[in-house]
Image 1: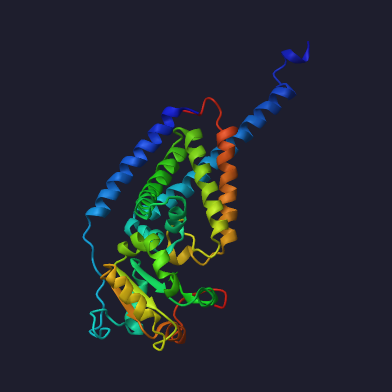
Image 2: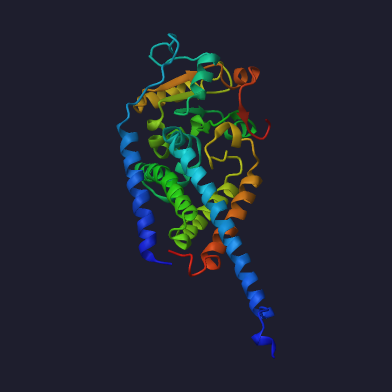
Length: 172
Length: 155
């Protein structure tokens, strides 16, 4: 009788199974964490869309930042308006895709790109209020570093999903 | 990763955003009422007291313009106010115009009623066709005295 014929799993196979389980668990956790945050961010902005639009277009540096990049003031403002209306829907769709396991890598890639832009913008404009979830009273008092830290953790989660986290049998 | 999935995500988001944009564009512009009968002599530019200014400040479609010099603005200003010193008004107006046109109310303020810059700036903005401009004559000092929201290095 040799060891291969017994019912006991081989140590190498058991270790592989464990690592696959851990990878799956991390992947699911990242999907739900990033997805839930993006869903929340999208929904909170969409339900207050006119107010969110005014807050960003009238009280943030974003239109002036675009005006520096695009010479025509009218055109840059129009683009800022389009971005402000498009962003919450993109967040919502990405969050939806991540939570419901559809196009996970692509949604995570878009989420990662958005998070990177948010981090750069927060660091460049530390005095500005975060309009991340558009819950003005609850979130505005938090310091900038806490938003950067949160976005950084979510960015790591998104990158994990893009590069490692979606096993072949999970991806749609 | 598939390009098709990226296209789907952007198409769905784009369609929903276009719908929102259309709804927002179609909504009727509600102009904030000035809440005071007092106007700047010789014009119809309303003069605001602190209560009216605070009410307008709480409205998200109001812009506060700080016309004091930049160091004063950096030291402290009405929370959310933009800096537009009178000396830079001509140079920077064209870049800010779309933003100002969008606002339902523009409140111009200086340090107090002795400072004529808010009047001159308001007149200039009115000449540029911004009919929603208002003056908060008692300005920064009164805003601070009432302990209303401020930001800046000295706050």
